[in-house]
Image 1 (spheres, rainbow, N blue to C red):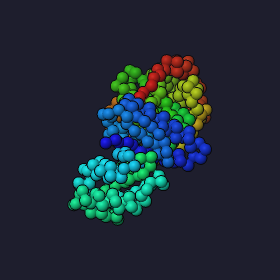
Image 2: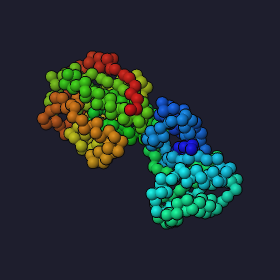
Image 3: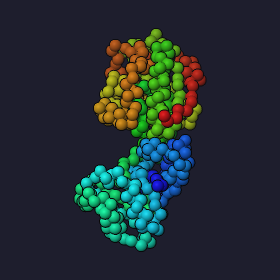
Image 4: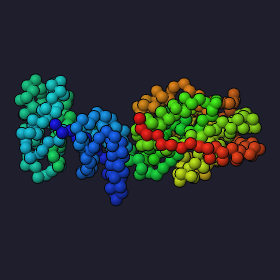
Length: 391
Ligand code: ATP
Ligand code: MG
């Protein structure tokens, strides 16, 4: 029996003239994600991307799992494909393909979509015929048009496609249709969610991570790489930049007023991130900040941080509660990695009493007392960059 996956486009169908470029981006992303699983045939018709495994032995569960995470798809269904010219073989295939579900269920109904208007049977007739055949083969099961346990869907398109219902896809719009952004990626709960949310709106995500060896360990960095690999299931491969931040943090500790450590550190992170962006031709930043969550995320602190930025800073979590962020991070499977107990450079030299309402002039004045420039340059030049693929 030939299985096929029907992936229905979401919002992109609304995009008018851009529609085909959105659809192409989506197809490219799907191809990229499935390539290593074997050979597939792809085609698009009626707001649906058809994904047909060509090789025998392709793990269709794994295919579904991957396609489920690709933005731009609202619904996806795993179906059996049958030659539509032979009604008897359609009936046989339906019963064979859905045997387990039909055996377990007490009630069902048939829903038919007839996209091919030249098909000799009308929708009501398709439902009656197939419904009758199912009742014959599974005498225990009843037709229930209102609350059936299982819906047998039959779509007559290029061929006949039969499935037990479509599930929700990842939604959003295809990655690659909204430009590129640099995510400041820590090992925490928030920033992976922030990256996921921007990717959901079509943004290609690069990431920069600041480490402070020996204050932070190799394992802390491995944890962040692991997070990036999970994010990449949704975002696509991530261009990852790892910056050694130790010298700068020591300079902050030795030369800046303690209550401004965090805010000045954040300004310097932004500066370094922007220089990497300029090299990579990326024009905006993303962080996992949420208003009021910690001292460095008050409105006043963000004013001071943004003052160090020449680029827009997107903060997709700004209005979310921690519990809401946690819920997303569990769903996208970054949570369990995020809570592994490794230190982050932000927790190195943290002041006992950080200023929650830093005054911009004071911050700028303090920062000007020390020449960070050579260290910034060194940090940017020694940054290690590599791709992290989905795992
Ligand atoms: P997260 O859970 O994302 O770490 P947080 O609530 O711990 O966030 P902070 O540690 O203050 O908050 O960090 C705020 C934001 O700054 C993070 O969401 C992230 O975007 C960025 N950031 C913090 N630490 C790092 C780091 N070591 N490398 C890169 N970016 C970082
Ligand atoms: Mg953090």
